[in-house]
Image (cartoon, rainbow, N blue to C red; front, top):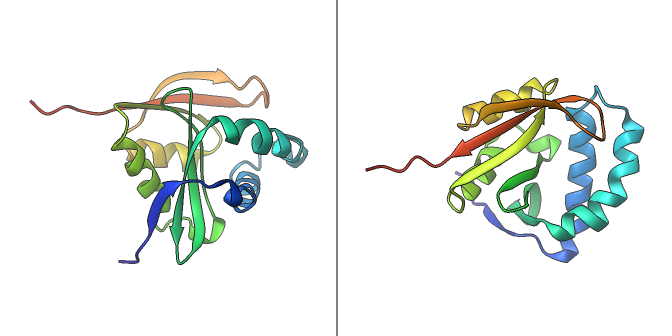
Length: 150
């Protein structure tokens, strides 16, 4: 198995993280106009990421994915470099957070079936369906809870 590490993002890594965010976002959300994501790039970089706890997955001195936790235990972002998808990076990031939190919640676009299936496989279940305020696309609210053994 390849050696990797997961740790809190350093400020100098923000450009690399943002490149993964934009590339993966455009690939995973073709049902939302590209200009919506490009318009939100600066907001994500300058307002969202500084307020989030962001952990990066690094292998071979290269960031291959990241996860951002906001508002306590809400997964605001989980993105994997397009060349590293399907190789366990997303699962490793989720498992890292599962070890630190009792409950994790997130929102996933209904049309992003690959993401919805991934989260279900990781033990998340749908708790709500709503319209995203900004993009107007339908999304699922999803939740995972640690099962305590007795």
